[in-house]
Amino acid sequence: EAQVTQNPRYLITVTGKKLTVTCSQNMNHEYMSWYRQDPGLGLRQIYYSMNVEVTDKGDVPEGYKVSRKEKRNFPLILESPSPNQTSLYFCASSFFGTSNEQFFGPGTRLTVL
Amino acid sequence: LAKTTQPISMDSYEGQEVNITCSHNNIATNDYITWYQQFPSQGPRFIIQGYKTKVTNEVASLFIPADRKSSTLSLPRVSLSDTAVYYCLVGPLSGGNNDMRFGAGTRLTVKP
Image (cartoon, rainbow over all chains, first blue to last red; front, side):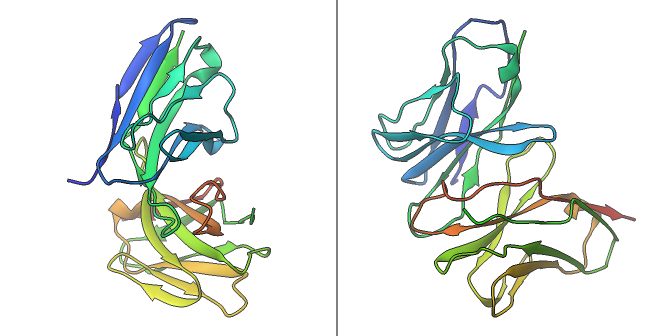
């Protein structure tokens, strides 16, 4: 089944404790991205990647890192999480240049205490 | 980046046709119009995409006038399960999806 998976789905952590949210897709998509969704602010893009080893900042990259060592994986890293990073995170993937259809993962609800 | 404007919310009743209009006055020649649906606590789901005139699939129809400055998503005979937020996005295919932005969307509530 074609899908985007994220892990963990739920996470409660404390300020400053490094964490990684994994994202994986099995559709051979070139393009992958991370969004966060907060009430009243909609979906905002954090980072995106147009292919392996190619990443760039989205609209709200501060406090986040990403890497794209393999085509299928695009982990989101919070080196020192803070309470303002409490949010619902979505990973998405798509083909590059042929469609604007993005496939979204199920979401990761992160709480930073 | 082409900016889009949609109504914040709409109400409808089961069995009715719902039309959600999106305004995108500064759409570029190579921009496409894409609509997504999002249920609470789920990721957005692609509904339909078009460039001009009319596009129809098993879920919805998309009407785009000749000047392309607006578009209308039409949902036939809605049911309670169509209650969701609907997003209109505009952007080129060649830029990946980084040239498109999710706005606030339109919150559709379908009542029995």
